[in-house]
Structures are given as C-alpha cells and as structure tokens.
Image (cartoon, rainbow, N blue to C red; front, side):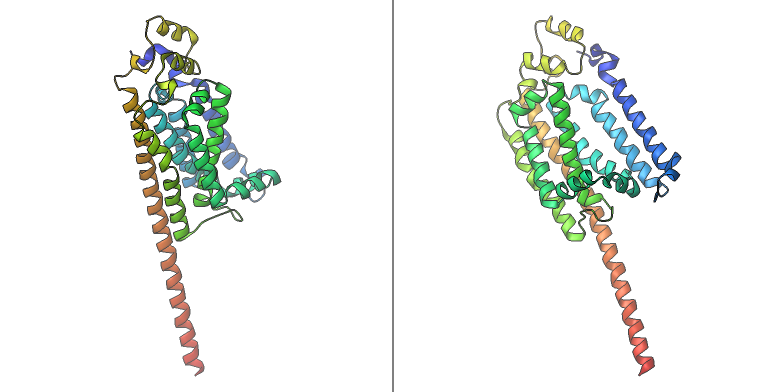
Length: 307
C-alpha cells in the first residue's frame, strides 16, 4: 500500500519542522544578531554554521520526514535512523555550537559537573554502550515503541549519551575532557568494538525478536504514536495488519539488515573520523618537529657566536 494513505501530517511532521526552524532562528539570534550582548563572544564562523545547519537538516530527515514513519514499519530503517542520529547529528551539533556559547552553557555549575563526569572517556564509552544495548533489547524496545513518554525519554537520553560519547573527540572548549592523537583514535576504535555485540545479536539471531515489527496487533499500537487513529482503523478493517502491508521483505531479513546497516554506517563514519584525526595529528607532529628543529638551529647559532 502507498505511504500517502497516512496523510501529510504523519509523513512530514510539520510541528517538528517548525521546532527545527525555531531552533535555527534562535541559533542565528544568539550567534549573530544578539552576539554583542554576551561578554566574551566571538563571530560565528562559516564552519560552525555549516555543521549546525547540517545537524538540523539530518535531524529533520531522521525524525520528521517520511523516514521516521517508515522506521515504524521497517526495523532496518529504524536502525539507519539511529545510526545517523547518534553518529552524525550528535558530533555535528557539538561542532556547530561556538565555544563561547558552550562556555556560557557550562558556566552553570550543575551542568558543568555533569559534563565533567559523564564525558570522561571510560564513563562516556560505557554509558553509550549501555544505553544503546538497553534500547535495542527486544522487551525494552517493544515497550518504548508503545508509549510516547517512554519513546521521548529513551530517545533524548540515548542522544545525550551520544553527545557525551563524542564530546572528548570533537569539542575544543578549554577545561573540558579532550583526547589527542593516538588516544583519540583508540577511543573511536574501542567505541566501535563495544557496540558490536549488540549489532551481532541482531544480525545473527534466526528468529524475529521485536513484536512491534512482527505482530500485527503490536505493530498497530506502535503506529498509533505517529498515525491518526482513523487511518489505523481503516487498516485494521482490511483483515490484515503489519509491515507486510507496505513491504515484501520478510521480518527476519529486515531485522538482520538493520543490524548490518548500523555497523556499515558506523564503520563509514568512524573511518572518516579516524582519517581526519590522523591527518590533524600528523600535521601537529610535523609542525612541532619543525619548531623543535628551528629552535635547535637558533641554539647552535648562538653557541657558535658566543664560542
């Protein structure tokens, strides 16, 4: 059946789009229009704007466009959503906020203490791995998809754990936990390894484990979070319900594809990140080596002149 039966509101989430637009307007007001009102502020750079706008566009794609609705039909699309939200939107959002704005935000004592604790490399790795694994445990995900409050709480909490995960890698705020060089590369590689077991279980399990993607009754209840009840009543009146109304892909294959997509997207993102880290680290080492060589030459010249 065509997705158009769900209507414009379910497909394009106009209220969520409005929230995104308001967020972009607020970003412009704080970083450009009202910047002079903040002590210690600096002009926003083109890179900051590109990163922030990219994070907002991707956020709307995964949570406001038809991709969000399809994510309730196909588990593989849901996993692609999670990969983009956690591995792309989170770091782009951090890099899109100017340091002086982060400093103002972190000047609140309670917030600063939370960040200092939860962005420590070991804690941030374990927290993200735990949240990701818990969220995709069948009993938990099925319950989350049947309750709007639970869905919102888990999504926001998981996204915040992704912010804490990426913070030591991409933030440049003075006094905040940061990794450099090989430590940063090792941190990213370890992050990839830690969520591999959860993805592997999804890929290699030989039966469908998510009721909300397999059982018609549970699927209809999950769809009620984003689709008008009148539309769902029409679907239930057809005598059949479930993802098979919209796809020929067997539930098990869809489930396994979801685990594969998460790992593939993760590997692509991490290869790009590690490549950038290595290039920056090599450049830093080369510049330092040149500076040391220059200082040695000056010392030798001084010794020769005084000798």
